[in-house]
Image 1 (tube, helix red, strand yellow):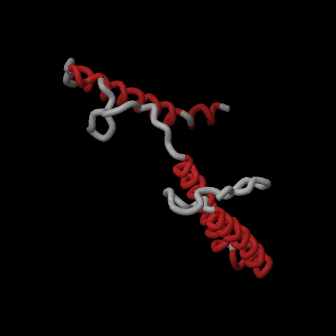
Image 2 (cartoon, one colour):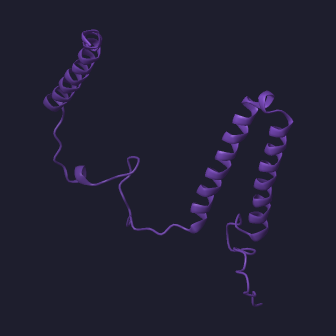
Image 3 (cartoon, one colour):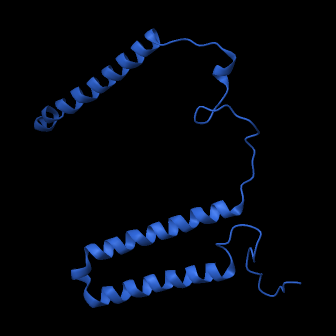
Length: 137
C-alpha cells in the first residue's frame, strides 16, 4: 500500500500547481484589469453589435428541420466511415447491410423531398397533407 501513496505525489503536486497558477492568473487580472461603469457595459450584445429588438423571436420550423437533417446525415456519415474502417473484416454481409442502411436513408430523403419538407418559401406545397385530409383547391 505505501507504494501506491508514493506514486500519487506527482498527481497531487500537479493539481496543486494548477490551482496555484489559476489563482495567480485570476488575482493578477482582478488587480490589473480595467473597471468600466459606462451605460453600455451592462447591455448584452452579439458579435459586437448592440441589440435592436426583442430576444423573444419565433423561428420557423424549417430551421429545426434543417438541424434534424444535419444530425441524421451526420450520423449516417459516422456509420459509413466506421464501416469503411472495418470493411475487410465484415466482408460481403457487412457490405449488404451498409447497402440496406443507405437505401433506407435514401428512401427517407426521397419521401421528405416528395412531401415538400425540404421546400422553403411560399411557392409550391409546403408540407404534405395529413392522412385523411384532402387539400381544397
